[in-house]
Image 1 (tube, rainbow, N blue to C red):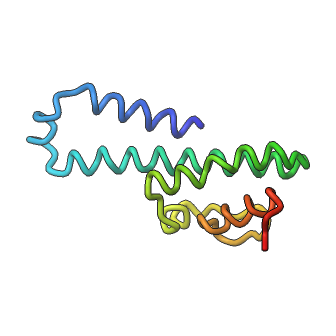
Image 2: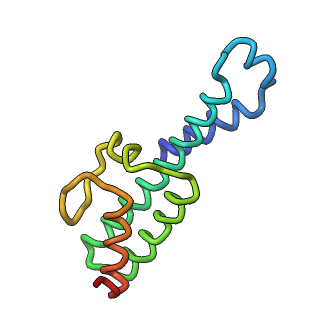
Length: 116
């Protein structure tokens, strides 16, 4: 989570400075701040996924399910796209394919035992 912590520090610093002054210097200041916030959310999803993978490798099904269950809500709430995850080249730890929101949802269904 070190990367996310650094991004949070950057965002905190940006929020503490005079936004009007920043907008005079940087035309896309608001967009820049939004991209940093989006990156924090993506890094958080990646962190959940890595923790879920570690639990999977240890055979801790309950821990994997609990950790992975946070990701879909964040993906939906923050409107994270599959392309955002693809850009980070994160691979599904079961199939080795590029991670998508559907793959996370499918794995959760498998873990809950309600896969059709």
